[in-house]
Image (cartoon, rainbow, N blue to C red; front, top):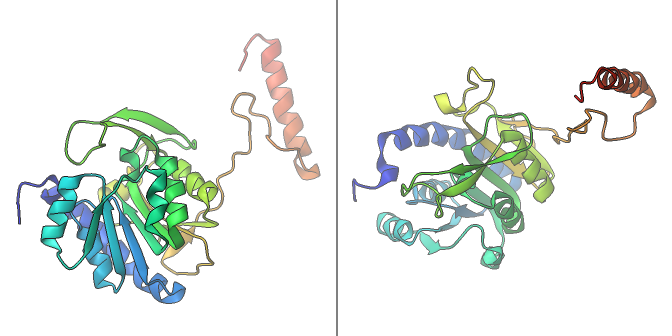
Length: 262
């Protein structure tokens, strides 16, 4: 086994230990409760989580966009099935349907993460587990980032980083009816809320079927309430909110009269 692979570095070992503990706490209950048998590991890297899923009793197919990763994964885990595939390819649905789609450390490295979420929704019969870095904003936004030319970065070295709420909204709009965070998050600094009010990384579960688990905390649909340009309600006000609507409208009207467009 090569020791020169970027995914063998100590900071990845620490992340995998923390993430692995969360997977271990969440997955057995979901596997039994939802009758999960098949899994796709999307963006599998060197196959670490494909092997974790296999040990949990899943029939696993693992794919990655880098041929060299797939070759190394095959040498490390010859009992598993690995293929080269681009997660952003609309033809990915030809792989079939899997009870679980597992996607850790990939989405924020992509130019088209929403396309991949839609691919995941087509591939997942019941559930997906996704993980990655999230941009620090409360808006459902994505920010275009330049990445370095490392082997653990984007294939094009340019990627859209979604905020956590954007990732939730993409999962909900992409075809999943429920969204959850693990309870608790992985025990690692990158999953803890920092001084800026945001965590650097997140783990999310999204389901097409009813889910009840003590290890998952539901995340409601993050629909915005206000137009970002006017800060007025996007939807007709109900009687109980008419006073709020009038108050906001009056406040904005007063500011505009004073020459402040905002």
